[in-house]
Length: 308
Picture 1 (cartoon, rainbow, N blue to C red):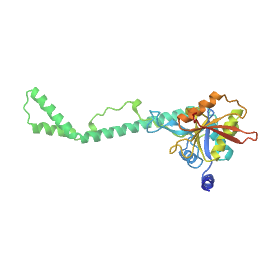
Picture 2: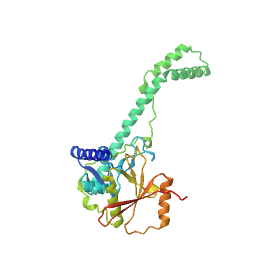
Picture 3: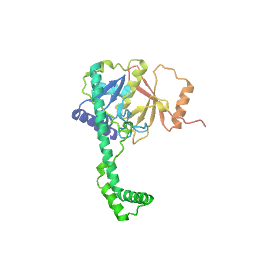
Picture 4: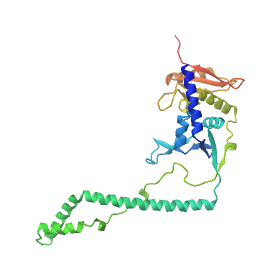
């Protein structure tokens, strides 16, 4: 009864998401399906239980590759399920001519120069504020330097007079020369979504996955496990096709390493032993997944128990 309640509530969430939100916009770029919109990426994970992989750099921390950001790149199986269920639309940008490309370059150069000037102004203001905070130290240094120069010249000027002269010089900070920063050190804006107005076309005709028998098995197994309420990610790091999670991968460890095999594909005993030992070492169950003659997914679990 509990599982039926979970299934029904999940289905209700998906139907509600389909009614409240438009179809998720997936862009086909060099044969890779990607999602650039943050709202679409959140909807994908929250309502449709698909994770994808973040492949972009973070706008606030671009010079590292430990923590990544948008866009989200989908596995072929994820996109196929979304298209089959009618939850997504696959788009592709129409080719842009050379004149439009040159116009975009000019606009970006103007935007870059404007950003650099704005950053220089902010830098100068910050430097002046810092000078105001450190004014007492600056005054003491200038006072000591002035007295040393006067003594070296053989002049005997009272300290109060030297200090007054320095104060008059330091009243107007606008006259202080502030060295500008080099343009190569400016902060660059990284777009998480294409900023240009562009013409899009439906690219579902270009998406031919799955084509081979192995791809059909993978796609069918993925959709079957997804319909059983599992979260699925790539299983390459464990030598499998997918990793199956009982909940969001950010909160749960995976339960299964899914390996897709053809129903008539021979499996040597050594390979079966290797799969079983692999699952035992990482504390997961290996699932051998294949399709029967009717095209339905079937599973065989492998667990290493040893011999006594």
